[in-house]
Image (cartoon, rainbow, N blue to C red; front, top):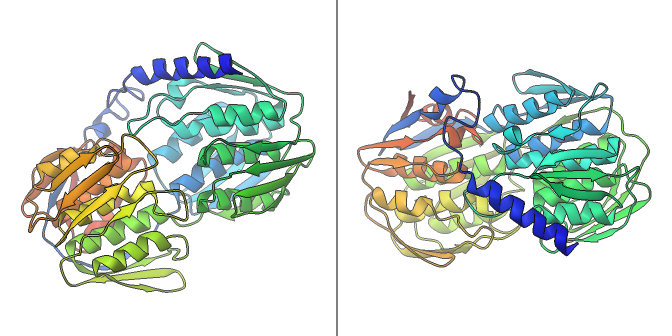
Length: 451
């Protein structure tokens, strides 16, 4: 086991050293121009109106992979139109999974899957591709999946996925940067992960539903996206107890069937737009939203002075004064999500008080600090803590996005800044936000995309 984990570490370090170049991660001529897109923002506008919330990226990706578990059709609604979704569908199609997409509806059928490989040239662009590993081994007894490439915000080790599958009886080797897993049929067992891992929980959950006997997943992630996947699996005939808790008990079944399911609203997109209003002022109602899965963020927004009103499927935020600085610490759900850290930091940049933010999930998730400081923010970092001194105003400037959530923080800061902000490398933004600039423009933001 030690030798196997060492092989994983060496392979991932090698892959991580191969830096991705914008515009070269897909076929030339197809995405190069999009990779050069920029957002131009003229800040200082209050936001008013309504914004519809799209389906959750982090729920849609594992749910799409669940299509590998059955030969029947799965009908999905509220699937967000994102670059990551397109990438995942392309990967699944090259395995033989039939996927028809029309707007926010996707119909999957896995009765003609003829390939159990996930090649590096596809996996490197999206780490969530590792989620095909569990379903393929569970249904077909074999999978060959490339180790993911390096991640800008920090390491995201996959050894928990591999240790769990080995505990279920899979034989796994690492060769030439690929995970090769084999098992005649996985066996139920008790798995205790060394850390809370969302994709690890999802991968092992999908593997366990077709395993022989009972599987108990201890220290399971409780994120709403994991719960959404579990709810779909139950609709498909899986037997899962403890959904929404850190202990999932799965009774394996011989076969799963088709189902219909709507992806949950994106809590991170919701939180991002709430932060945009908190930073700029205004009165915006978010529709098709879920209030019950964003408590930690809403509580902190109320501390800034925002008035938040929750409806059945709406969230209204009213901000009439300069925000107050708020301290927080990222942690696993139901705590404050790491995926909202950068956006909330942008709010603290224009707050009337100083604040500090502690990041506990990823070791390199402060890359947006330098770009925020280019806009006039006053942020210093010490280890995993950022100290923010609120300023009276930010001033527009050219900035560069470094990852998905950093992109969103720069957009929020640009909306609050005086003058013009140019956000480069917005292909990061397109990975996780469905037409963000169009939604913001509809509520009064002066924002446009240019080539």
